[in-house]
Amino acid sequence: MAKATGNAKPSKEDRKAEVRQIILAQGNDFIKELLRTHGLKIGASKKDFEIHLTAAIESDALTQEMIDAWLAEIEGWGNQHLYLFDVPTFAASKIKAQLQASQYSALAGMKQSYSFPDRLTLTSIALDGEHLSLVWHLGKEGWDRARDKDRTEEVELERYRYEAYRQRRDRSTVRFEWRFADRYCAILIHRNKEIDHAQAMEEIWSTLAALGIAKQPLAGVRLNNAVKSASKGKNSTKLARFEVEDGFVELGSTLAQGGIESVEAVRQTRLAVNDSAFAKAQGIFNFTVEEHEGLNRSIAVQIYGNEGRLRFWAQCPREDVYRVLTFLQQHNQA
Image: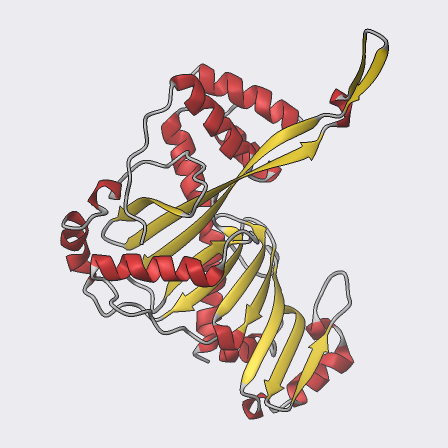
């Protein structure tokens, strides 16, 4: 079990560099939204974004508080695997006292971490009257080919060719999220092959046990009914698969726009399937801004009903993740 550890405070220039790297690791749409929201110059390319970000940070037009709030909304939301679990039986009103008395008390209310730890590390814990959030980070270094920086050089009688690579620093996020008003809590794991899901969950369960919030791993919430119910409606269902021990039925749409509900023969077949005879269900749904009011962007979500697992295929703000979860929970109870 990893204990909370303090990091040496970086210099101002180091902190600026880390902030830029983390921001630039996010999608272009989100960088543009950050700049647009605060009335800052945007530009047309990621290089432009970097120039304008640097200028905004150095002039304090873009403050750390602004960046903290922005990262809390978009980092580690979407482009991830999400597992649903039953809520702990521990009273939410007692969490604060448990946290203050624990080895993790220093992380309570800590501002956004800008570190790139080389192992999965608990970096912050947020608690208020509505929710509990625990966040882990994992850093990784990569190198991208930069052909425009290639060069040749003659040294004495020899000629050398240098091939350039640009350093890339990635940061993955793992979250435990419990909104006290919900009938479920969630573990969110960034889509990164460097993260072993079983090990990440073991770390989460160990931390929750140390806090006294959940002494045992929580039971998963199955979503088979959500897939069955949602795939009967007008939702854009790209694929629905129903399984029994010795076989399965699978229905799909190859339309660029629209799902099985838009293919009459497949739609009729779906309605004719007695899905109650199938123990398991999986599906791929397109949650579009046209069909789901309030979404910031359209999102493809793959649902593994029996595992209680969702795979979000694109990054999106926190509120979009919860809109999808609310929709699925409503169908799961149908």
